[in-house]
Image (cartoon, rainbow, N blue to C red):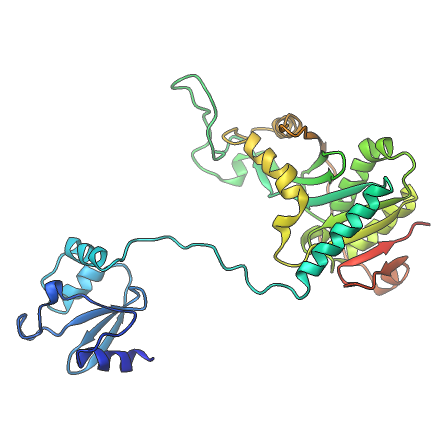
Length: 344
């Protein structure tokens, strides 16, 4: 139904779904003189004046003023009371729409689960990887509260200008699914594919090869976008270098678009790191390293963190010739999401 056909129905005295009569106490047009009745429609987004001619006004949050301009004697309090009587209230947006699911999303989840079980059963390493939100290092406010002596809160900058800080901190994590252990590589420049692969290399050198001495394969579970995205050429290019350097066959399974919250690193490691540092200003890189490294859980999570001072170049282009030299074997099931890169 269009707004004009709805107003015609209102003028005829019919009830129209989505339109709210603002006349207080149900007074008729005759009782309030020549002032035409006014209605709200579209969830209080428009004011409709249903006189001899239909007039529709978009609202900018000043409903009472607009009504007075239309010769109604009414205050903002009366408008609010009337709206509450009609079941309206001030509400924020509610995030409920996830968008359209990727085709065969559930099948990809089952495929990833099957790959994880197969690798764990053969005692081959499985890591869940992702980049955490970039942080500003300096005396900036960090949401949350901490126990402090009464009247002695952390004092931080009034303004959040980047120039007042030390620089950015880019945490890239690798979570060992089988051992409930994690490693976070804290970068200082850009979140690039080279940085992502270097973070995995650091995890392997510090932990992986020590715990999986006989490993010949590595399974990486990653999101479908960002520095480790399935369409990122540089991600695959640098993974080939890692496979060659360490003599590993690397299998990658990407989560479908819009499903990053199901990535194990999100709810098994990053969420607890966020809780652990609530209310603590990230005044230095060492503070970030300490807060991450002291994160634990009742289930025995252990996390290590190291600073990566290297500057990574953004916008690196990988040629078609470079891609053709990759020893990449797509899987039969969703080859754009699942593939193996051989070493050597």
